[in-house]
Image (cartoon, rainbow, N blue to C red; front, side, top):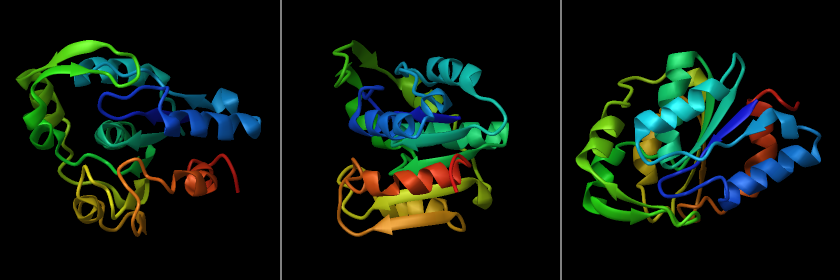
Length: 185
């Protein structure tokens, strides 16, 4: 089972989420995919994700979803693919406190200090190297890819020159993600 966790102000309608769903469906694996719509508050997002997890699940976390994937992978002894993951969203998103709107659903909400505190509380001091596949592009205009490379040192890493925060090279990594998740050889 692959559980895709989208990023900040995103949704299951994001390009990567839909691409991964289609890729799995084309291989007869549609039943092995879940992508919950994550509420803005971490505690509510985790409450929506955890019931979907079982032994052998593989998380795929993009940006803020990478923070959730890391915390959940360590807590539940799971594997995780991290796509341009947020390392310290409680710091990086501080500048965005105030009114927000989800890019896909149009939902409006207020980003508050509580959001930041909850994200900070999900920081895992040390990660288990064999558990992760890190996918980053050096042209990420939102997050410094070098922070992710350092944070996940010792983990399987793919660093692509250029690109951007959306991970333009994502389609070429789909077979590798399936192998890492144990759904393909």
